[in-house]
Image (cartoon, rainbow, N blue to C red; front, side):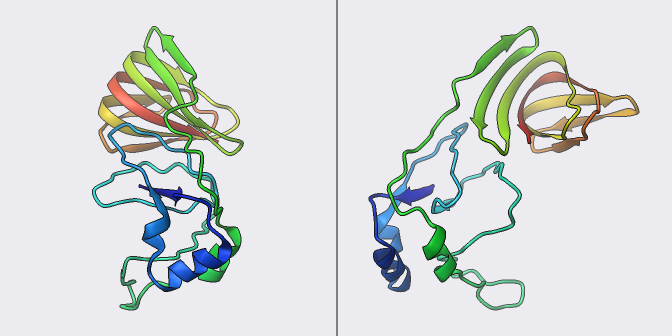
Length: 190
């Protein structure tokens, strides 16, 4: 995982290294393992390496400024556009303090454990290790569920579905929902 720079860099050096293809020399490379959690703040240079599968919880911004695209070609057969000038203006150029792991909030319950992974003003992401049955209900916003391991049955007033590893489930606001099974679920809330 590329996570920011390996040292503080000036705007001029950042621009030069983009143009002369030496940017990788000043990137901060972080080895990753299954289950790792990284909170990458807006404006932090980042890229996902080969062979890494991620669940990316993010604010709804639809803004990505590419400084490199590894030679990829778009659907039109041309290289995808880069956004160097915009990236130079918004990218944090100091070495990041890597907030790794989780927030430390951990709750043991009769149905399993809940570990808060990341929290900011825009979202909360938690890991539910379910061994049994529990209910979720939020009146003010939706909840997103991503099944990481095992199988889960999701029931609500009008029906139910069974889901397994890789399934994503959208639970609307004000929908009392029962989860049952032996599973690990990434729960995202706004």
